[in-house]
Image (cartoon, rainbow, N blue to C red; front, side, top):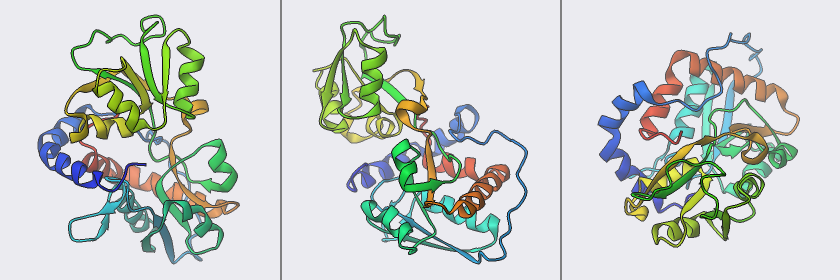
Length: 281
């Protein structure tokens, strides 16, 4: 998870790029959602649902963070409000500690957690989820001006690739890029610094986090994406969904319906392009 001090970096970055990048992205960017204009499912029974109590984290800008006046805002927060609007129910959105998201659902203190929670095998043991509302592609990045443009296992043999240890990204490299020199770091930030310093040739990791790093002050504009996105659910999860208490399939279905309605109205794309004028695809 991105630490709170990055909020300032991301907000400044967005203000610098937003006007031009938003217009450009509108016609060129792939919005990483799972709804592709499918037939809308029937409206679920909402007679007993008068409000939805969402919880989120507060230190993952621009998904959720406190703005300059101390108000909780961000893509996840605005998406939760949009869902409540299309469902015509009251909306409560409260911040909590990341580690207390699922326990809060279990205790019945909230109905749903919208906090960029990945739908992984481990997460599904603790909670049920709505449909995915954005994908989390893996990406390679390299230093600008280097020769490593074509990223395939055979073209990066012998190159040193940095990755965070203990992640699906590391497992993927070990499976498919066996002839590369894999350098496992304690954190993604350590791998990013090593690439910036020229100690490694490439890094492989979460495309969302890499987008913020590449466009933020910490990278000093050293690097850029190489190759395309990798979307393998076995290694990188199914994407990000809204979590509900394990067994509460009714709420999961209601939220999935709400997400579809937000997509169909064009509101999802509007929100996504507002917060992400730069693509991580």
